[in-house]
Length: 506
Image (cartoon, rainbow, N blue to C red; front, side, top):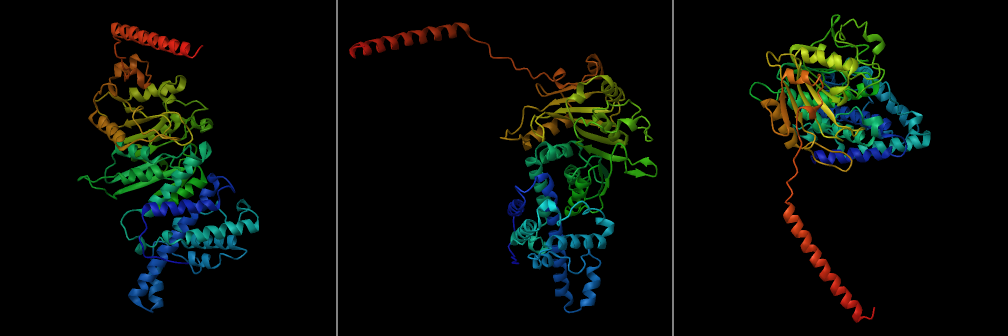
């Protein structure tokens, strides 16, 4: 296995990781093989950091093996003997290489149980998913060789930068997998630009408790954390992160994502947020300064049968329809938000205007003066769906301001072949408009409560933001004159053609 002291760029690392995915392409769906790639990347990261620290201590303490061993046991993650990437690489040609990798992961988890308990439980490199024995061994050998690429040397001494190259690479892979997986694999992943926009809108302060109750693989939660600023406007690490997800695979990926970003203290729970909320203080729901989420759109079977008897009283404003859980997540987020906090949630447009029980809940939220802004986004931004979405911002500390700002940002974006994206200029305009909270012609409107009541609490953005562009008035005499001139020119051309054909004898 070769090494290099050349410092790789973010693009170098991303390309090498994406190339490693060739091992599994065509064998089975990316929604499944992504777990193998991401777990193996984490294993390589742990091994390289461990190796780097060993080399550092050897330089400091020479041959004092006992002292070095004591020092190593105090590290962030401890790797038992024969649990390194080098050990796996040396055994890559063995017939039981899948079993060897599984045993390495199990030993690492046992040694670091307080942090890694359960994160590898749903994956086996000795599984028939990877093919029968020979095919599986060939694929694993290719994977190991790919990760032996000098570009994927994750030792801090080699990376040598303050930038979060490994964390960004992990997020890059998550987004690429979501983009290529279609609805099945991508519908709950929030594109990075949308995460950044939501983080900028919520503007988290130092000391904030931040929660995503449908955190998935953690990209949105991490992006909001990276937006935390101190009183001087500088980036701050003074925050605490909390998340929950019902899918065991994405929960595990979220845990790894937090570790790769150095956010080890994040409390990420596995369980159904509506039926079994696990972020508790005593018997009560934990409260947060910032609550942010991109819940699954209009989720069926969200927990309706248990909601009426909810011991946390989250549904006192009404029960959402059984087949659409959007307002279930919204009400959970509002109930877990501190009296001085804000909620930012991504929703399908139906949430803005659907009637029946949803209409009653929407009316109650508006009458309580919780809703602060409704922001319409361009279509085709999200993986797995082309429908446009909106951002709702709830502010529990609105005070006497009973107005709601409507922003129609649906027409300003970068068009792509498969997916549209928000540009920096688009995001900055949205954020500036929200911060100034003023009407902007054809773009934003500050509506008072009476206007919303007159619209029967319908929040459909075109009811408030008039984006109609009058067509330029047509100069009828000029058009008529142009038609006459064109007819004259056509008659002349026909006459010339007739004369030419007569000369030819036609």
